[in-house]
Amino acid sequence: MPRDGSGVSDNVAVPAPLITIAEARELVLQATAPLGVEMVAIADARDRVLAADVAAVGDVPPFPCSAMDGYALAPGEADRTLAVAGESRAGAPSTRPLGEGEAIRISTGGAIPAGATAVIPQENVEVEGESIVTRSVVHEGDHIRDKGEDMRAGTTVLRAGRVLGAAELGAAVAAGVGALTVARRPTVQVLSTGDELRAPGEPLGPGEIHNSNGPMLVALAAHQGAVTVPPGRLPDDRAATEQGLAKALQNADVVIVSGGVSVGPHDHVKPALADLGVEEVFWRVALQPGKPTWFGRRGSTLVFGLPGNPVSAVVTFSLFVRPALAALQGRAEEHPLDLEAVLATPVRRNPDREQALRVRLERRNGQLMATPNGPQGSHIVTSLLGADALALVPAGQGELEAGATVMLESLPR
Ligand code: AMP
Ligand code: MG
Image 1 (cartoon, helix red, strand yellow):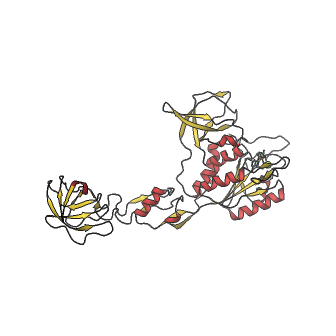
Image 2 (cartoon, protein in one colour):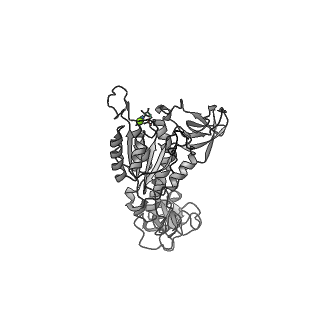
Image 3 (cartoon, helix red, strand yellow):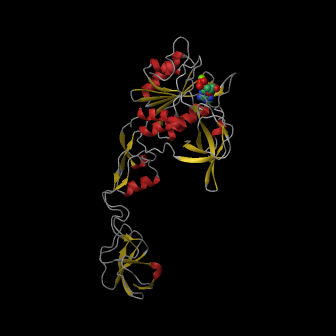
């Protein structure tokens, strides 16, 4: 049965119990399965999520090579005079082995010639015509990078679930790989509901406001690896809402609707979704801001109905949509953050709902301190500016005192 309290009779409104943030997130994750994989060239793999382990094709370095510009030689005492018998440059190995009484000029990355077992840096020799005089003792193995010192052929270098940043791409290329198996990116459609909404920069008529949520939710989804289609706007009209949602459901893996999920007479999202066969998983979370959050699914398509207030939309995206986008891509998730901080100021608690405060974080005396980032109303968009994280304040009476420990949740960009 839906958890929306709609199964009431005799005009007795029995409010459905609100579920916790953790319960809601668990329900989201239960409904979410990885989307599938595709191969992409290294050049297109940045920020994608690796979907298969990467093993080194060969040893890295592939051959013993020099760590210095100098001379390849045999170990020995200082003050030896050796004939320079050739050169081994990076990319152009010496064609001839090292002979008795010889040194071979070598550059960093140059292959160690057969017969040589050490390198002397050029600053430790004196050049005399076609010979060098060594000015330091040379030990076996000096300044030689061993074959396979970085990676051994066949060993796993990267595990599935990693986001591919510069280091991962560099390691994959060194491992000998030219293309990577990555998770398919979820397609996300953002829809903003409300007759009052105007596009960015448009002049406002009476009672109108700008649509902040559309661009914010697109930015958030894109930052989580989603392919975002241009955001849409739905008027507060039942038929138009249903039409817009039907189209979005056809094209997207995830539909994010903002606004219109409360209990007002102009909130058409829930009934429209029900008529479109989107099954409700939960409605309403014991969370401030974000109580009216709705989540449902049709087959593998996920639908989030986020509250209209911009801060509520961002908070509920962070807590519920972000983990879903990560799970769709098989991303090793850092949710919950499992990081705690100490409240810098007392906070009035909500008797029934956990609060997600936008906080600034700073370290004082080795302690992570969380300070609320200005007024916390769900319409105060500026409370998001410069906020480092969400701090969860448990439901309860009175105040949570300064110095109390709070759990943190990440606030994605
Ligand atoms: P609703 O959830 O539709 O009742 O909206 C709650 C509040 O959020 C109202 O004040 C709306 O005007 C505001 N709101 C709804 N959608 C947006 C949006 N896309 N951008 C900015 N504010 C919005
Ligand atoms: Mg509305």
